[in-house]
Image (cartoon, rainbow, N blue to C red):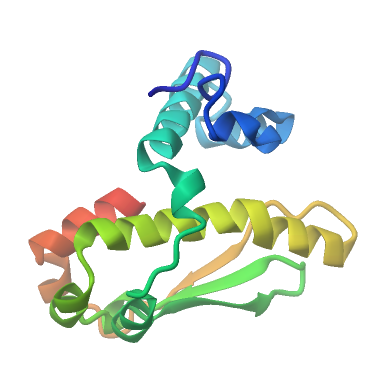
Length: 167
């Protein structure tokens, strides 16, 4: 399945998500592509295809028994909000133990986990922060602590593949 020119494939699970057709969603992609309409349309179509190919509507309802290992060996999490009401996300890639992580989590499942977390950001965290703040919150504050980052992680081929897919 692939997204139609103006939205998700009609009848797909994603088609039932109004935010995917919202002005706000379109503006996010326009900003990401410096207001180049053609590039933004290409990007949003790729996003629709990604959601459908990942079967994210099903995936987001799936439990991740691997989550305990992801949290243990890939230190990252949300930690409340900043002064502007944005969700605060902290990631510490210098402390990732990729060999141990991959003993418990397949690379595809790690990508799935981060795809679901990203979708939760749009569907749950940002709307909750907006309600709490009484104004639209459409961004998060992300802190990437590079302390301890070494070439061993950067040169780990599976790690590179996973990081490429989730960014």
